[in-house]
Length: 203
Figure 1 (tube, helix red, strand yellow):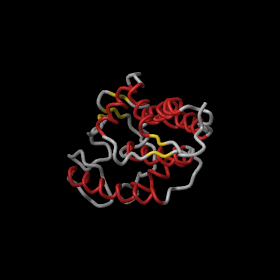
Figure 2 (cartoon, rainbow, N blue to C red):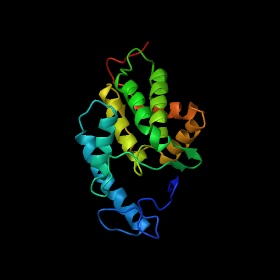
Figure 3 (cartoon, rainbow, N blue to C red):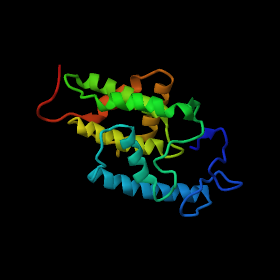
């Protein structure tokens, strides 16, 4: 679903809502199909060869740049317009940088030690919701977020596989979280995060 924004044609070809892209595609449906194929391939590569970083905002932007650099000149760059989607207004463009710095600093320092499975899910859901509300890019926010969080969870010693989850159920959980109801998103991560067979960190 397309974003609502200050200008629906911002960064688009004249008279269209199709984003200006390196391939010169001016049909929005064709661009969406091409983008999905390109990004899926790159995300699969990152699953095997993750981008190394400190799980800070710079790391997040580098993942977005890798996923979308073949399509957009602005890959990895913070959006300059305000956007919303399905009734959710995301962080204003002017506030993204300071909000992101605070969020990712906290995330990078998180270890998950001595947490129960539910406790870990609550923390991850809170981080996921906060980053989702940032929505720092013009396009591709959900995809970079899923790649980043998969890599981050694995760095903590757990596993997260979002490839087979119901995308609609996941989206609905994030929408409820944006409205202040976190239960569904916490439940989602409790069911999806896989604990190691040995050395399980429980209270």
